[in-house]
Image (cartoon, rainbow over all chains, first blue to last red; front, side, top):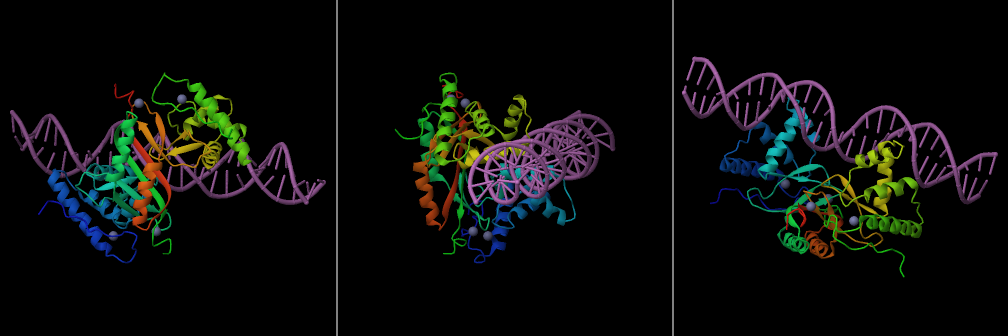
Length: 166
Length: 166
DNA sequence: TTTGCGACGTTACACTATAACATCGCTTCC
DNA sequence: GGAAGCGATGTTATAGTGTAACGTCGCAAA
Ligand SMILES: [Zn+2]
Ligand SMILES: [Zn+2]
Ligand SMILES: [Zn+2]
Ligand SMILES: [Zn+2]
């Protein structure tokens, strides 16, 4: 077996039709593995932030995370949660959604990848898709202009199948 | 002849190799046309903000615009510049770069289009490319997941040909 | 003249993010 | 053991981005 638990593939927009506890649990297990493998520390705060990010498929803002942490009894200051998020970003365990100033759990931790996010403006949920085909087109286009691509932000906003009533 | 002055096509990364006064002038002329055509008012403030956005090919933040406006003698409050930007966005005269919280002049005003932005992390300049081919791929991919796409954020960060020293 | 309306002024505030420095616990090295 | 180093977190303050709410002003329609 390889070292990462593959997260179960499912449709995050299928609201009640999936066992999200399992999403959350698997994500935490995969994160433990990834950190052990990388020799970095998934400290209690970092783990708790990741758990909160995985509370749903809706990207969540840093200050919303702070409020959730406050429920635990602590009331940490902003740098605490931003440092945890920075760590999780570096380890590829969460993604930042630029168009929302929010963070969402990565569904493919441990794999080098770029992502396209489908973000429903009604329910707020986001789905992460592998951007490989699009990445190829964009890389080619960039090269045509002599541009060396490093980072890519691909975010689509619209209506998911649940919210468009189909 | 059609009603929009087509903006001159050139490479915004070719630093000193283009007459940027002309970029700026043409953009303002095209904006005048577009607003007259739409029956909306390009007021002095709106026009001045657009002119400032077009001061370079570098996306510029709202508060940087405020500082520039202050040089004119006025010192408007934030809502003034945000309202101008909102108008310019609605009219398709500027774009917002989500990954930078900044605004840049549209090089294809009056045409329905989606854009891919190439953003150089060294010189800060951005180039707007027509995203039509990529848009097609993404729309198809979204439809496969029952997702009705409405808005698209496509932003690539890297090094432009001038800054990569070639 | 009155009414309505769009644009702008003004004040205050909400939300997002980081700089700078202190503390604490652990490991390493002597 | 004690000193030094270092990563993680605590703490305080502040920077940067964006909006709500309400008032004013000028113009045009009725
Ligand atoms: Zn789930
Ligand atoms: Zn939805
Ligand atoms: Zn130019
Ligand atoms: Zn450059």
